[in-house]
Length: 124
Image (cartoon, rainbow, N blue to C red; front, top):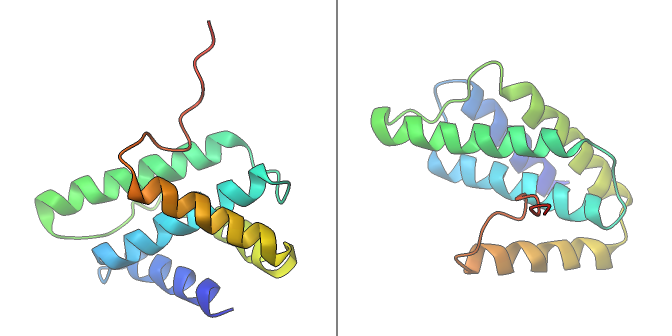
């Protein structure tokens, strides 16, 4: 519950003029956690939503690097909201072992220099 609240507060801050790097990082965590949990069987949001969210987060960081303002565009916020809604449901319903495993995957990704977990494999 506390984690979900932190994610939602981060989104509210980043929809207004009160966002920060910390709040964007919280939203990055929520997107990747939702993706990891969906890969484990909790959720069925189209992959394109995750790609859109990741691009929105990167765009927000790029704009902030130039302007100092950590704010989402209005067209990007709904996809983050959709993923947060899914993640709320995942946190309420998924077995704790899956949440722990998803967190472990997230930590491994964040500790490395590898590509995003959202990169689709190339088809030959």
